[in-house]
Image (cartoon, rainbow, N blue to C red; front, side):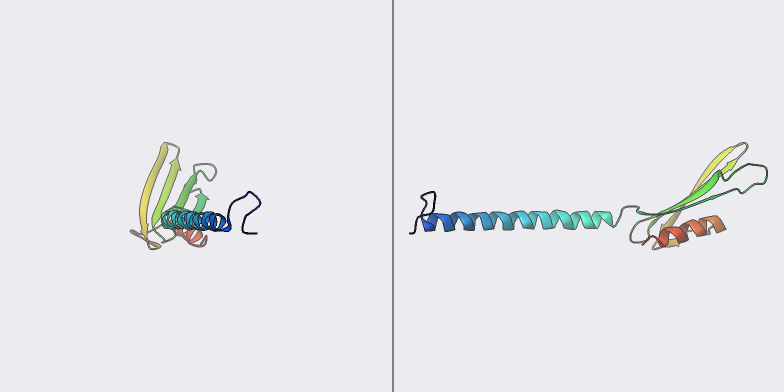
Length: 120
């Protein structure tokens, strides 16, 4: 009666089960640690984006200029502006900390930042 179907004693079966429970507990701790690190890293990922396309000059066709605001979960990130003219394209970058820009923004940059913040 104290033998399992494979001939092991009840004591051996319980010992094997306890070993398996401890192995699962160790693996769970490992997974919890990795999950915690991934959650922390994901807070720094630029996952909130806002895009505004526009035409700043009357002599160029189409909305070829644009602003992209990219923020992480803390509201830190960057506002990138690309101004397209007939003579070339210029790109500007402005930093953002806690959702606040480090310098003044144009109307289009403000709108892109608003769109990025709204993606929370």
